[in-house]
Image (cartoon, rainbow, N blue to C red):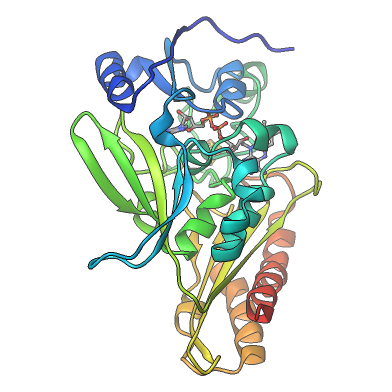
Length: 333
Ligand SMILES: Cc1cc2nc3c(=O)[nH]c(=O)nc-3n(C[C@H](O)[C@H](O)[C@H](O)COP(=O)(O)OP(=O)(O)OC[C@H]3O[C@@H](n4cnc5c(N)ncnc54)[C@H](O)[C@@H]3O)c2cc1C
Ligand code: SF4
C-alpha cells in the first residue's frame, strides 16, 4: 500500500475562513473535498501540497433545490459543491429536471467514491493519462512527462502540450445542460459558464485561479427539456470513462425538436460540444437526427492514446455511445 505524504490539515467552518486560509497558504495548499481523487494522487506523488484545506464542514456548500425564476434568470436547479455524488444520483428532483446530471453522478466510480466524492470535486477533477496516473516508480522508469517532472509527452511524440483526458463524468452533462458555476476567491465572487470553465490544457484544464473554490452549480430548468448520459468504460461497476456523452433535447410546444446539444468527453482535456448537434434544424425528424449526429460524431472526435484501450476502437465507439444517449433523450415523454 502506498503511504500518504505528511501534510498539515485545516478544517474551516465557513467559506470566508476557507478562502482566507487558501489565500494565505498560496501554492502550498489544496482544497480537500471527498478526497477520492486528491489523496490517491498525493500517494502517487502527482501533487505535493504541504496543506490540505478540508471543505467538508462548510454548510454553505450543501443543498440541492430549485431556485425560482427571477427577472433575469429562469428557474434553476442549484446544487452545492459539497453535495455528495450519491445524493445527487439518488435525488428525485435532479433525476426529474436534469437526468443527464443525475445519471452522470450515478456512473462515477463505485459506491464508495459516490458516498465520499462531491460534485465540486468532480467538476474540478484533474485530467488523466495512462502515462501520468501511475506510481512515482513507474513514471520515473519512463522518464516522467510534461504534466509532472518531465519534458516530453508520450501521447503526442514531440508535442509541447499535454492532452490528458477530462475524466469527470459530470462535466459533459453540466456543459450540455448549460450550467453556471459560482466561484469564490480572495478577489471576490464570479460566475463562469461550465462551457467556458474547461480549457484545452491538460496540465491544468480549468480557469479556476489558485485559491478559488467552486461554491455551487446552477442549471436552467426547462419544462420540455430532456437529457441523458451514457458512458463507455471497462467495468460497469467502477471505472473512469473511456468516453462519456451527454445529450440534451429541447422540444417545442407541439413536441417537435427545437434544439439539440451533445457533449462528448474523455477525449482531450476539455469536453467537446458536437457541431453536428448544434446544427440540427428545429423540426428535424428524430431518426434522421440520431443517425446524422452519430455519424458526424465519429468524424468530429479523435480519441488519442492518452487512456488505456485502443484509440481506434474508442473512435468506433463514439457514434455508438452518442446514439445511445440521443435515443434515450429523444424517447423521453
Ligand atoms: C477507483 C476510482 C474510480 C473513479 N472513477 C471515476 C469515474 O468513473 N468518474 C469520475 O468522474 N471520477 C472517478 N473517480 C474520481 C473521483 O472519485 C471523483 O471524480 C470524485 O467526484 C472526486 O470528488 P472528491 O470530492 O472526492 O474530490 P477531491 O479528491 O477531494 O478533489 C478533487 C480535486 O478537486 C479540487 N476540489 C474539490 N472540491 C473543490 C471545490 N469545491 N472548489 C475547488 N476545487 C475543489 C481538489 O483540490 C482536487 O484538486 C474515481 C476515483 C477512483 C479512485
Ligand atoms: S498527455 Fe502527454 S504530457 Fe499529458 S499526461 Fe499524458 S504523457 Fe504526460
